[in-house]
Image 1 (cartoon, one colour):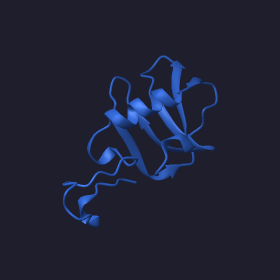
Image 2 (cartoon, one colour; image 1 turned 90 degrees about the vertical axis):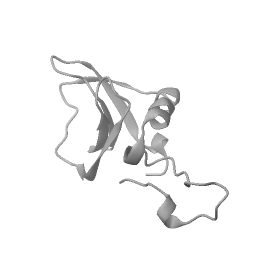
Image 3 (spheres, helix red, strand yellow; image 1 turned 60 degrees about the vertical axis):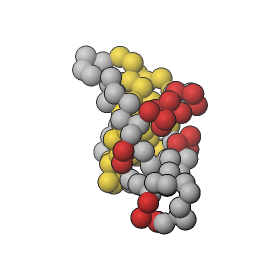
Image 4 (cartoon, one colour; image 1 turned 60 degrees about the horizontal axis):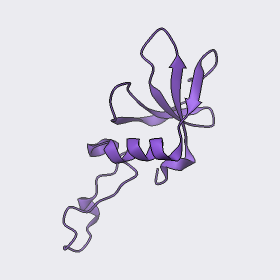
Length: 99
């Protein structure tokens, strides 16, 4: 999950329940962002039973996706890999990567 723009980010726009932003690739649901937060929640395995039928969505643009990626924190930030101390040699244990 190195490039957030490879996935389709869809925000649900008409429903009687909380509308979230869904991250999909083809028909597989990879993760979502709860309404009102910027924390990206990733599934351990893609959800294959998810279906966008009978719902209305709008696709998010690059700027909106970048805002989610930038504002997401902790282990929910798989697209940004930052070493703990940039002056120190890179060690694989310094990275926080979530799948």
